[in-house]
Length: 155
Image (tube, rainbow, N blue to C red):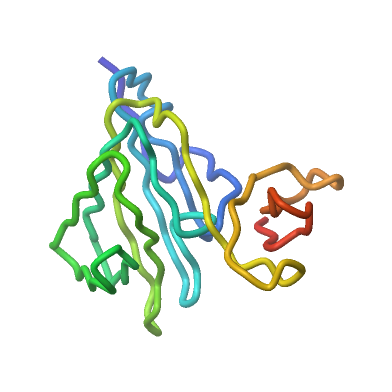
C-alpha cells in the first residue's frame, strides 16, 4: 500500500498549469493516473492526438473541459466523465473562463505509440509532431516532424 498527499506530488512540465502523476507517485504499474489543473486556454495534451495502446478516462472535478473528437466538440462538466478507446483521436482543453480540475486515468500504464497533430506555420498545414526538451531545459517544445519547426512551447 502507498498513500500520497496530492499537493505534495511534484507537478510535471506540460501544457497544463498543473500535472501531477499520481500513478507514478503511488507506484502503480497497470495504469497511469494524472491530476490536471488547467487555466483558461490551457490543454491536457500537446495537440490533437491518439494513444494506440491505451484507453483514457477523464473525470472532471471542477469546471468544464472541452474535448475535440472525431465526432466534434464535447463538453464535460464537473461530476461527468469521458472515455477514449485506444487509437481514438482527442484533445481536451479549457475553453471557458474558469479553471478546470480533472483526473485522467489510462490503462495500461504504457500508452504505446502516440501520434500528435498540430498546425505547422512553416508547412502551412497540420502535421505530425514530436515533443522534445528545449535546449534551455526550461520547457518542452513540439516540433514538426516534416520540417523541424517549433510549433509550441510549454513550461
